[in-house]
Amino acid sequence: MYTDIVIDEAYGVSKVKSKTPMSNDNYHRIASVSKSITKQAIEELVRRGKLSYANLVFGDILTEFRVDAKMAQVTVKHLCDHTVGAWATETRAVDPMFNY
Image (cartoon, rainbow, N blue to C red; front, side, top):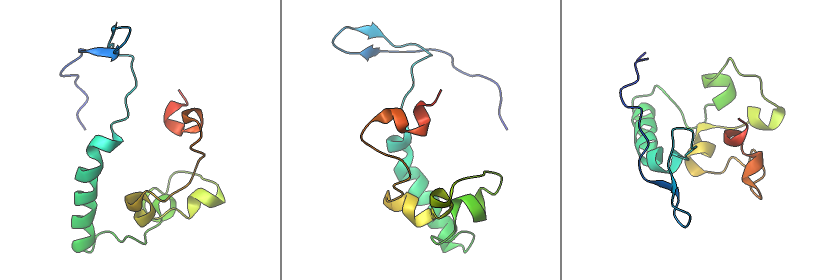
């Protein structure tokens, strides 16, 4: 695993209207940027027989996590199709990404 920081800079603005500068403390949703790359990698693993769309994410793959019954049923296909429905979407505050 690589642990050395290569670049520690922030560029641009975090709020366009107020021209608030970007900082290293800003949070970003990179999932949309990386989704297509991740999906291609998953398709390759499925093609090679190393992964199945039916695999349970929190059972077959991530075995060290304890999750509730609803999350325990999430499959690789759910993630690829964006059909998990694991948390409410009315407000981003309930998204685990923002529990910092």
